[in-house]
Image: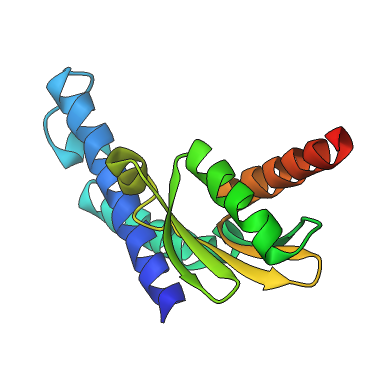
Length: 157
C-alpha cells in the first residue's frame, strides 16, 4: 500500500512541476498562451506526457527508497545518544523509539515538503549496527556519515 501511495505522490509531483514550468513560460511570454501553441499536438501531447509520468512514477519508488546497514560498533545504550545527536546535527528529530529501533523525521517544513513528506528514516537494530530505511539519497548520506563519525570516535579512544 505504501508503494502505491508513493507512486501516486510522484505522479502528482511531476504534474505540479510541469504546471509550474508551463506557468513560468507563459508568464514570461516565452511561448504562446495556450497548450496548442506550447505543444505541437496540443492536448494529445498532454495525454502522452501523463502516460510517461505514470510510467516513471510507478517505477521510481523501486529506486528511490532503500534499506542499508550502517556498521556501528557498540551496545545500543552506549551508541544511542551519539546516534540521536548525529541525526539532530543533520536536521532530523527523533519521532519514536521502540525497543532498540529508532524513527527520525526531518525537522524543516520546506525540506519535508520537497521530500513529499517521505522524510522518515527508520533505524532497525541489527547485529552489526542499524539497518536504515528511507529515501536513497538520505540513507546513503546518513549511513556513510554515521560510520565515519563512529570510526573517528573509536580511533580517538
